[in-house]
Amino acid sequence: MADATLTQAPPGGHLIQAGEIDWLKVFLGFGGMVIGQFMAVLDVQIVASSLSQIQAGVGASSDEISWVQTIYLLAEVVMIPLTAYFSKMWGTRPFFMAAVATFIVASILTGLSTTFEMMIVTRALQGLAGGAMIPQVFASAMTVFPPERRVTANVVVGLIVTLAPTVGPTIGGHLTEALGWRWLFYINVIPGLLSLFLVSRYVNFDKGDPSLSKGIDWIGLALMAVFLLSMQYVLEEGAGDGWLKEGKILWLSVLALLAGVAFAWRQLTYRQPIVSLAPFTDRNFALGTVMNFVSGMSLYSGTFVLPLYLAQVRGFSPAQVGTTMLVSGLTMFLAAPIAGRLIRTMDLRIGLVVGFSLVGIGLGQGLHVGADWGFNEFLVLQVCRGLGAMIGMIAASQMSISTLPLSMMKDGSGLLNLIRNVGGAVGLAMVTTILAHQSAVHLGELSASLNSSSLEAQGMMTQLSGMMQASGALDPDGGMRKLMGMMLRRQALVMAFADVFMFLTAGCAVAVGLALLARPAPAVPVQPPGGGGH
Image 1 (cartoon, rainbow, N blue to C red):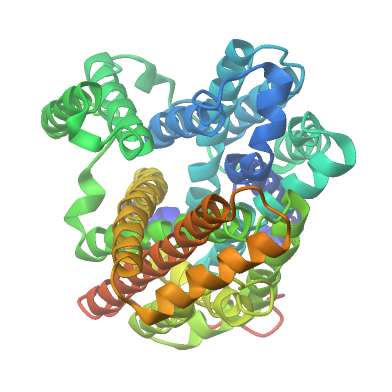
Image 2 (cartoon, rainbow, N blue to C red):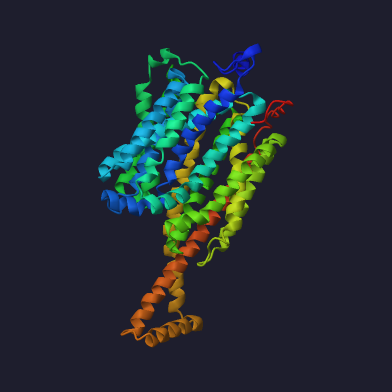
């Protein structure tokens, strides 16, 4: 009965005459939260195509600069599961406003950074604030709106989650070339102030419960921080350090495992857990977390792989990478209303199958990737991946909460967003490992084929040596071997990228199979005439 009552209750402070809800105010408030979420998700990838410029600006080494992204993700992944507890304690509006204000200040300070150490501190603060915003938007979409409007709200959230990381390199590349890297962070100020204004004026969705401030599970909080920080560090740095062959990675892996087990036990036994694991008792939610894990792998890995290929193999500038990646962003933006209508009219399991099948078909195009692929060759891949990711992620989110009690919605939102981020981290770690390992394997195979008595290989070497002689090189044979080595390394890298696309395609195939195990979700009510589709 409690859940049913909550479902029917209108958002507080938004009633107009005759007891009707002023949906304009509700959507303005929700829109302000969406702006904050977009900034938080965008800032993970906006620096991706400008790391070399940032490195020069703050005097970081080549080994240090990756931490500009890593520290943001570490802070974000720790904050996301805590958001449900703090938003229930303080209420959505004050907690979200505090997060936005912190994000604005941290963005300004990051833009003003003159040293690497200062940037790391301010980026960590940014990540904490961003992690506090992201789950609250999804939780509000599922609790504030009635069933017939939830799919529309979920489409908006899904669009942000998929679009922001995809267009991040595009916006970042063009912004850096036009105004300089510091504007990657200054750009957050205006939308941040707009979000702060809308949330402060129109968000009045719930009230806080101050009693939760008594008996906070500090031990559980410490165990969770150790678990997530250790795990995220291993995933971010493991590939470059040889995984368990390196002592620090080995011990951090052991620490993550022990802290994770202790944290789960603590949350299951403590009277007031800092992170409720109760949503996992729902079958669809448990399966939905797997789907969100896979979608996180597909989304973040696909966004990571294409710019990496274009920069390393084709030598594209940040702006050229951004222009090529724009196809995915436009596809997602245009597909959002279509995806929403499809999800309303079909079994969510069909939506999952269709969505992940399209992503798999798109990524499968990359199995034939060549050294000269560019905008045109990646067009079909990006369109299929963009459309499929939009449908699959919305269906996965909707299915995850379709049978979840309203009282567990905030906890479920935090867990889903955490799982998606962890999936992205695992995907990036796997992609990096596959690229490094398979590049070496393919280089060895190609080198061995040249050392054989292959007439084709001998003919190629003779041709290259002749070219060197014609150009007046002092050491034609040495120049030929150097050029041949460069060609072999490039071809080995291209073949490794094809292996990455195979791995991601296989992940989508697994997701399609898992989708069939879900229980049918309740049908989404059709919005009544005159309801005003928003």
